[in-house]
Amino acid sequence: MLLFQGKTVVLFGSGCLAVECLAWLRSRHIAVTAVVDNNPAKWQQQLDGIDILPPSVLTEWPQQQLLIVVASSFYAEIKPQLQSLLLREYQHFLSFADAVRYVRAADASQHRPEITTAPLAVFNIELTNQCPMKCVMCARTEGMTRRQGLMDLALYTDIIDQLAAENPQFYRDNQLWLHHFGESLLHPQFDTFIQLAAERHLQPALSLNPLLLTPDVTERLLQAQPHLLYISLDGHDNESFFRIRGVRNAYDKSHELLLAFLRRKVQLNSKVKVVLSMINFVENTESIEKMQQYWQQIPGIDQFMAKGFVSWNGDIQSINQYEQPQGLPYRDFVSCQIPWRTMTITWDGDVVPCCYDYDKKYVLGNVVSQRLQEIWNGAPMQQLRREFNANLVQNALCRNCTSLHQISEV
Image (cartoon, rainbow, N blue to C red):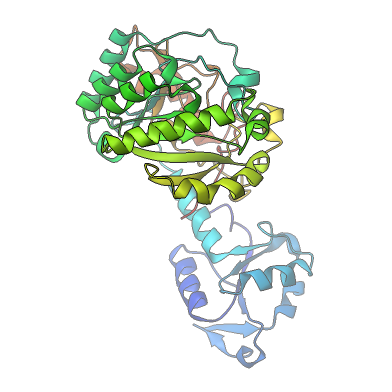
């Protein structure tokens, strides 16, 4: 395990959590050199055969060799104590929970075949890449150069027929998102697309802007019965909306159209689940504080979500500036599992690895001339998996992506 390799591993804490941690470390064949604790009453006692020592002994080992696993509910208090010894979090010490996260992610990154026998799945299908918004947090605004258009209905039908045949189980547990980098409601047949996916039990869902929810669109959308709608309304007035979404004098109108949509949903006793979504980043902090409680009490909204900010594939600096560091900062392996799980299809039939690929930077194939199964284990996908397994990622889509090495919650 690279995190522990060549390290002097010390356990900080001697209570019940430390007992669990020690057993876990030993189960991973990780030797523990010492146990330290802040409680003098514990010194000179032992934890399962290992002497319990005062934290002052930590200065006796070279820092570059030291790795301290803190197994205590007092991590917040122990952290500054260790930092006062010039020890750095994640370089010299980390919590038991973070150690578990690291090891589980490392285990999951092993033994990933270049040709997988796992059934293929598609995370999202782009009905169109046209959009009236100029959002500051969207890669489309500044970075998308590809041709704009609308997906052909016959092509779409062939795609979802393949999905229903290849992996119906996936769509019992997951939605098929009918958007990518565009506003799906701009497609003149959006409701037909939703209905066809619903008929095949693919649980269609989409994210949309309420500025498009005219009375006609509202009726068609509700009658199509999507499984789930994320309705995105950032800001709390026209000025804040323009600052985030780039359209002037649009918040009040969006707000009015959304309320009308929700009233109609309630009138029809529609079972469509509606999530009111606001992007959680610095430009929206004030608006979330002002609006969260308001939206939570509006009939027809099933859930309010402060949606996590993403920088897409990390190559647009104007977006990167908004991102807050997340996860563990280790780069020992590629933790991203997307190439073994799902694909994304753009409006013209090109298949790309994931929903962060706004400009078709890594094309796996095209469903106009290829079957999805052929693309799923085709040469471009095999090469992508090879890069991930080797931790030598150079392709234009993935090389700057902050999700590449991100270690998620356990």
